[in-house]
Picture 1 (cartoon, rainbow, N blue to C red):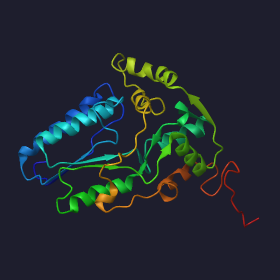
Picture 2 (cartoon, rainbow, N blue to C red):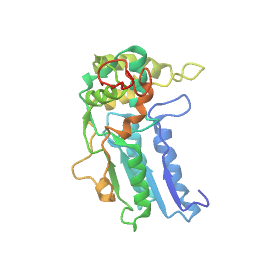
Picture 3 (tube, rainbow, N blue to C red):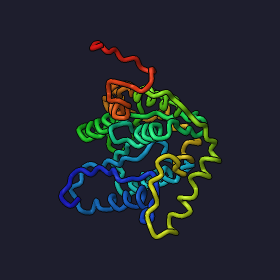
Picture 4 (tube, one colour):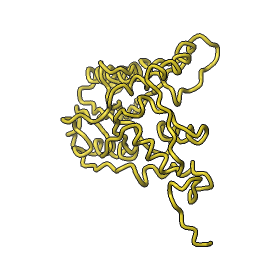
Length: 266
């Protein structure tokens, strides 16, 4: 950072490891970067937080992100905070794990029956919002933006979109939150008690299960994409096209009749 004039903090993680807790990754590292303003020359600081970040969130990660925002604002009142919703894209951590699980086990577990509402956003739009903030006349400095897509989905509706794209019949197993917590708890209990790294919790992540107990959508009075001159894209279509890699038989053919394909060469 010594020779930088722009800092974009993207450090964060949605699960804990033996070496790093939620607070260390999502809060303390951001605080250290903010204190590093002593190097001088930093004109803009963008803090990428998370939609739903709040001191009262049921999620430890989102509470840590809220603490990071507060710490950075103390050091850098001119910081621009971006709170993106769950992001969709080529290497995302929601549709990819879902599709992989559905192809491997032929069903998808839905916590709370998939009734929780979220507002997923295309990752390219989030990147565009950051660039727009950096290029403006400084009007975005000291402000917080909540970046959600143009449509609100329930988890079940988003899973339907995934199944439609990979051309598989949707099969679900409803998992109540108490049962999901029981399935996720062993990893948390063993995390610092075994001499080897624990597997990454892709399906049953205890903190994400806590987060799914409440809806996570853009606040009515929040600054959003429109205030940065950006129109976010709908997910159906190009933003989720990367899921064709999970189609059985290749991108033009499916293993079910959920999407008919014309075979003109017959």
